[in-house]
Image (cartoon, rainbow, N blue to C red):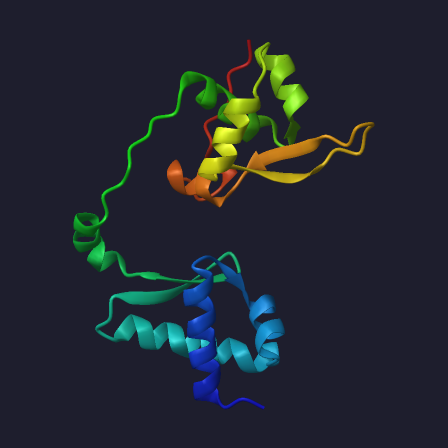
Length: 170
């Protein structure tokens, strides 16, 4: 059985290496530590990071843990990061909107609504991580279903898809 400090170190390493959200269940599986033992350790780590004069923190959001920078340092970090501002074409925005509002949706359904081929547009959105393959439609040909992912929410400053503005009916 691993000791408390080893568990903390392992959690920190997992969250750092993953660089994205990790569920408590996944941590239990990776560490082979019971959830009842792990939860208080995670809470303790969150308090330690919050109270320490460090630039990082562990946050819990929707049942997922993330290691991230503290908001106090956002001004400093913005000096370091030089984002590449690549605008989305009108075709990409139109396709992205269709996927966001009608997901899960197939390429053929997108092309039928838009009236043009969407291979390049969909590939570009996949490459940017704004959309992802979310399954396969159980019909002949088994077309891929597309939906938005975490990067879409991050790029548009949304916490969830419920924050998307409503559509006006014609």
